[in-house]
Length: 94
Image 1 (cartoon, rainbow, N blue to C red):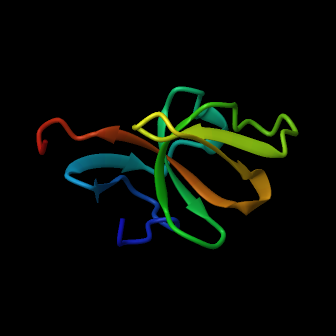
Image 2: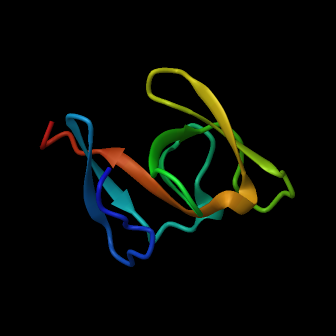
């Protein structure tokens, strides 16, 4: 992903590889549930499209678990996540 939408206030489209996604920054991160596709904006580093595996609801978890569309698992310290936006594949563009 080349454009940084971490400060976005309205839904936007993003291209990831050969697929387009609608990204909605207006959904509170606390309302995003495990299994949802998200765009993860880290404090530093590359923006990532991932599937949330653990709640991001302020439950005190220090690590937030994700997986890639290919099934690889990874975790990010909660403090290292600058923004988390809900995403859905744009079927009309794909």
